[in-house]
Structure formats: structure tokens, C-alpha cells
Amino acid sequence: MKIYAHRGYSGMYPENTMLAFREAEKTGCDGIELDVQLTKDGIVVVVHDESLDRVSDKTGFVRDYTYEELKEVNVAYTWGGKYGFQPIPTFEEYCRWVKNTNLTTNIELKTGVFYYEEIEEKTLNLVRKYGLEKRVLFSSFNHLSLVKMQSLEPQIPVAALLEHRGLGNAGFYCHEYGFQFYHPGIKGLNQKTVDNCKKQGIAVNVWTINAMDELEHIYEWGCDGAITNYPSIVKAWLDSKNK
Ligand code: G3P
Ligand code: CA
Image (cartoon, rainbow, N blue to C red; front, side, top):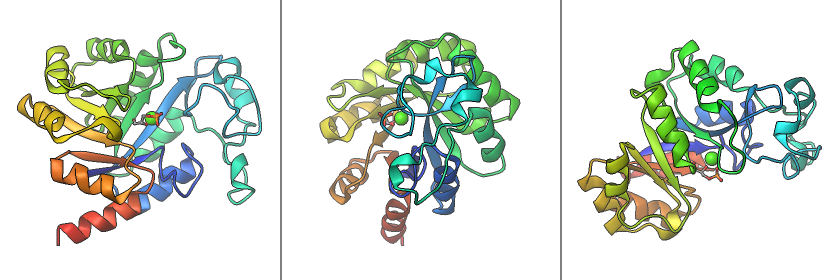
């Protein structure tokens, strides 16, 4: 089973920062999950919420800031000074770093609240610029973004993201639309749905696995990946299982 560090090593470090990504890599995980959005001037940046309010010292929407303005935002603000100033990375900065690692990147296109014009093209151009085509997969809660990405680049796999209720016949659904992965929330997942995916050749990566009983369940069900805030714990557990 593969391990994806959710927003980097976000259980211990400020989410979606280069610090969290570098620390994730040190754990020996297989990949990183991150979220992309666009600034006012169309730069692809790595940040989870559409608004800056939850994690930073500023307020308002990412899409209302230019990148120059966004550079001043501290997304380690809620960590009480422990990690100093941590900026929102550009996706290009991330690509420049990750190309020299062995990591796979699950790029979540955050197009479910605001539909950012041309985010698919801009993100794909950067993936191509850094030669990462064979080491990425795209996911989104907005499945139209996946359909668009597939039309732009059919060789890169895509993942249907679902909230916790999920889809009972997810395998059939993903197969029907040509999605290679199913990414459900753990709460509504069960063996039957995993089997339905396996039958159709659809791989299943589950989020967000931060409890041991959930990890045991998805391992027993035969899931392909765990998306977790604690990659070091999942790695240690899997290593002990595989001994
Ligand atoms: O990709 C899995 C997970 O990240 C989806 O939910 O809200 O953490 O982006 P969220
Ligand atoms: Ca995400």
C-alpha cells in the first residue's frame, strides 16, 4: 500500500508549505497530496482553502490577491511562532523541488467552490515543464475538471474525489468515465465498494487516514493507498506488517 502525505506532513508542520513537503519526503513516503488554486494574476499556488482566514495572518480570498501580495502571507501563523514565517508556495517552486526526488504527486484541483479559469492548462504546463508527467495524478471533487484534464492530457491518470458518503458503485462510475483512481473519504467506505473498484481495475486511495483502526481497515480491504497527515506513523506500521 502506498503512502501519500496529505498537504505534506501536515500533522506536524504547517500544511501545504515547502517545509511540510520536505519533511514528508524524509519519512520515506511514496507521494505527496497537495491542493492548487489561482491568484488574481493567474499564478498556480499551493493552498487548501479558498480563503486565507483559517491558516494565515490575513483575511480574504486567494483569488483576490496577486502573487506579489500573497508572498507576504504567513501560513504558519496558527503554529504560535514554532515555524516562523512560511509562505504559500507556487506550484512551480514545488515542481522545481520535487523533480529531484522520487515522490509521486497527487495534485488536487480546487475547482469545487470557484471555477478558476484555465487552472487545468496552467497546472499541466508546469507538470510538463518539469518533466513530471509520469509521476503525477490529478484529483478533484469537481469531476468536470478531471474530464477537462483528460482531454488535455490523456496519459496522466485522474482520480474521482468523493466526500465521505462516497459512491456504492464507484468502480462502475470510474470505469464509465475513464477515471483510473477512486479517492473516497474513509467514513463511508467498505469492503464491497473496494471490491467493486477492483473488479473494474480502479485503484483506491483513501483520505484522510489518521487513526490506526482506519489504517487497519483499508489495509485489510486491499486499498492501494493511504492519504495521511502522519506519513511517518503509517510508514512504520506498514514496514512492521511487511517484515
Ligand atoms: O485528496 C484528499 C483530500 O485532500 C480531500 O479533501 O479537503 O483535504 O482537500 P481536502
Ligand atoms: Ca486535498
